[in-house]
Length: 85
Image (cartoon, rainbow, N blue to C red; front, side):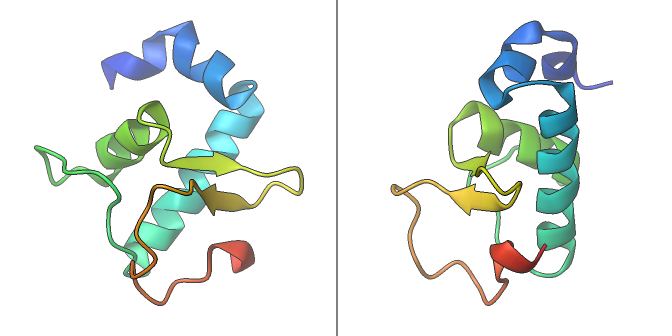
């Protein structure tokens, strides 16, 4: 199990367990569809990459439960439309 998921900090950062689960699932779909990671990960494990993206405030869920990128992410990150996931 990924150690960061055992901590309540990541749950609180996202706004609850349901939102965390939704964010992880939607971002994993995007990565599997070809989106580039927003962080440099030391592993090929996409789940760990998503966790690091959340912890580094690169992604979040908006009010309509869609994955959004923060403003400090370069615009040229692939052709995946996060609003449709």
